[in-house]
Length: 219
Image (tube, rainbow, N blue to C red; front, side, top):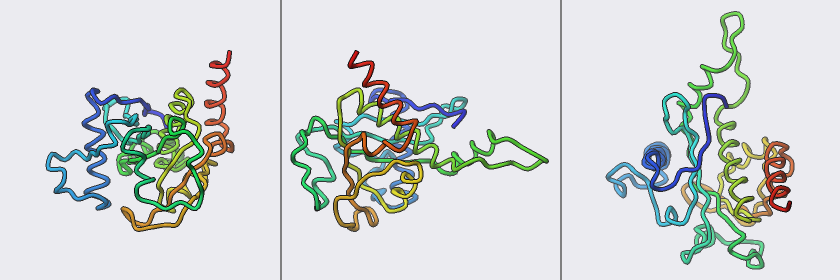
């Protein structure tokens, strides 16, 4: 998506507060997944933030945070998915150092669509839509996760997803294997887990980014 950049946001970065504010807007105000009263400062946060890598989609001109995602790393607290879901598949054979959990995906859909309207081409006075702006932003954020995993040697990913998000990713040929039943966890969600290389194998852009980095490291 033009006019938008994707960056890693450290916890001391000035925009980290904006990341938490966007999460509050989406998870507390819009979707009701979290209780707003638990975050009187309007910043949604939890213990996993301390051992996670955060990313943001940022408007080039306004510096507004339009989307965010995080990669939870190994910690003494364990992965949140392991504490809330039952699995049909054993994942214990994978070293925790080689696992990450994709979490806290949030996109400002309204601002995203407005940005898309401004950058799409016009013909005969009518704006011609060329794709799904929200899905494009999600794909860009997932690309950040893939590159971070590649650089850290993370080979497997956990994710908790609603069916709608699974479908969005599958359309982009990003396919997470489901490993357990749905439960009511911030709405109906199911656990997913798989080898990163297999998850992204069908997406040429992601697979090239993943493979190129590994080739450089091997050299």
